[in-house]
Image 1 (tube, rainbow, N blue to C red):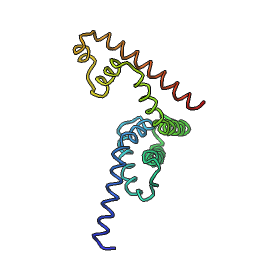
Image 2: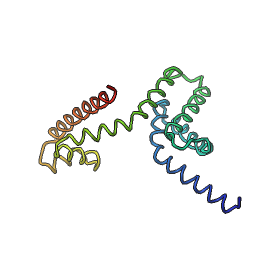
Image 3: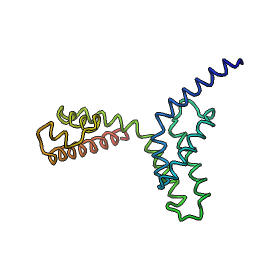
Image 4: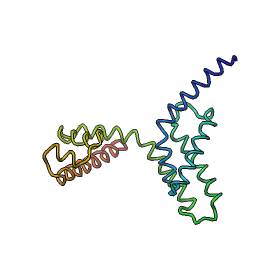
Length: 181
């Protein structure tokens, strides 16, 4: 293989890795932060995880979850971190860490189904409710600004959002339960 072909192969590898990585990094960091409550330690472990993911990228199996793969690498680095800091008081037992990891992984695999259920439930909202959700969460407008735009009280906007949240939660739960039936 010529040096030019080798360079092109590495560029493709880099492109593929960073495309996956940019989509997954926040979820991997959240996973680590769930397992390691000290944010400085979590940041260090995240950096080491990112580095190891790049070094071991040839081991990643295309078609599988890049996020799950990254979380598995992070899990072992978290265990290693715990062994190194064994003298410091532990916040979580090894069993608790294992359960947290399993629960997080389970929620990640359910995420696409939950997103689809959410989309279905949002379509069941009235046009005004969908607009409110859009303003608050997609456009990230503060409740105070929405209240001013709509000429309503802040309390009323919060009540409407709470009602919508409740509806969406129950609707999503019903959709997920009906899938299992």
